[in-house]
Amino acid sequence: MSLDWTALSDGELATLSIAGRQAAFAEIVRRYRQPVFRLARACVGEPDEALDLVQETFVAAHQALPRYDAQRAMKAWLSTIAINKCRDWARKRTVRRFLSFALPIDSQADAIVDDQVPIDDSTADRQELDRVTRAISTLPANLKEPLVLRTIEGLSQAETAEVLGISQKAVETRLYRARARLMEKLNAD
Image (cartoon, rainbow, N blue to C red; front, side):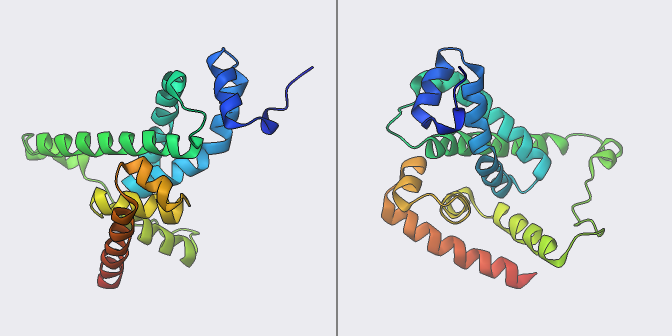
């Protein structure tokens, strides 16, 4: 008799995964890979980097499963891990940028990236989504993270506060500021 993995709770899946059932963790990944990708993409602004961060998030989550509290929402727990992976990515990127200035100009020519939206069969909606995603990714982390968790991932204000380790009032304030700053950026383009 095989288990119906889709019918199990997140806590049951975590327990079975800890016990060595790979299919249980595969179900966790199936359930949450899209929200984790959206979160990572909104934080870093680059789809390829976001895919790498999704993978890193689930590897870290698998290793940390014995510490998972089944009373906590799996989505919020994974969001915390993903946010931390995005923060790590941003720190590494800053260091790489700093070190790239030490390279001779000739070696930097290969590192120049074309950040223009490709003009192919993209629709206007897709281009607008990319523009907004890029604008969100340029916000400071303290504004970007609550905005992404609340508006894109749909976490409650309490869950967002828990993930970020701040008060619910701080979440509300940061959301207001993030939206105002985002509107400024979008109107400036």
